[in-house]
Length: 227
Ligand code: ADP
Image (cartoon, rainbow, N blue to C red):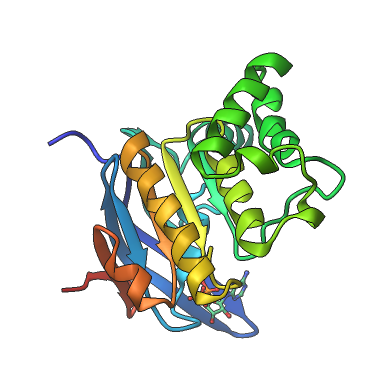
């Protein structure tokens, strides 16, 4: 088997709260392989966002290691982590956070141009991705002219525009009606399979979670495989 795209090894994370220390992650282990989608299902407060932040190199573990590819990241300097995050990680949030003044295509172009692609190259890839997600005719619309499901698909296109190794999503369909959620989710998992991304998706939607390759939860600060 190939190496995992991302591997959280024995990660620990604690927060100080007044005189107390909250131990949120207590040696969590999670490996995700290219092309694999993993649902993270756990009650509020269990540490899902904390885990996603560690996986996304937005926070450092207090102990343990986060390997991206085979590269250990925990002791990298902040600017190296930021560079790696831009290259290797895509994020999708519950709310799309698209820039309202820009069209769908421009929203998807921006991260590519920040990375150094020409406008022409970025435009080509944006249109291709939007078409793939069924949004070809919407490419020149601004977010305000799109439905919730369309906005979220643009956010997905933006997240994968730079072909990251890992896609992290926090309740990506939490804000959508069930049918739209189903549609957006189908597009997301198909993209993961075809592009060889590794995806970690926090969700409360068990129907959607069932359609992913694996389901995990957090119990007492550790990852437990479900089923
Ligand atoms: P979830 O996403 O599963 O709801 P979180 O990872 O957001 O859980 O939070 C887990 C616990 O850690 C919660 O009790 C939360 O209050 C606490 N927590 C999260 N971030 C911080 C922080 N920066 N400082 C202090 N406590 C935090």
